[in-house]
Length: 119
Image 1 (cartoon, helix red, strand yellow):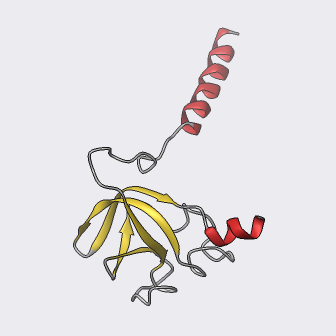
Image 2 (cartoon, helix red, strand yellow):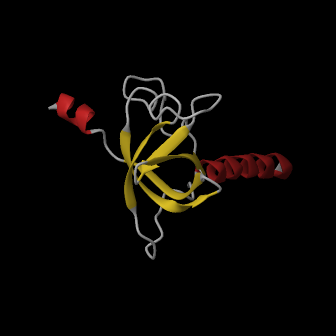
């Protein structure tokens, strides 16, 4: 009986811990500057060369594919307001490494067009 109870509690605790995984990209580093950039599918919206739909950001007029987060972590890319159909604004922190933007913080900002349609 104790074994069954222990197994049950272990299972419940395991699921609870897994559900609490917080993205390391969810909190900005207060010692670094947060930039607001354009974010979209690099291939569909920014005309970048690639094999599939991949998240990219545009900063200072240049586009970079993003490492550290993916296009699918921010909703359906092919939805009406998704990255393949619309350029969105995002707050980011990170650095450009080998021609790619390595994100240490990424937060998609509210879509103003979507917000206006709700009113």
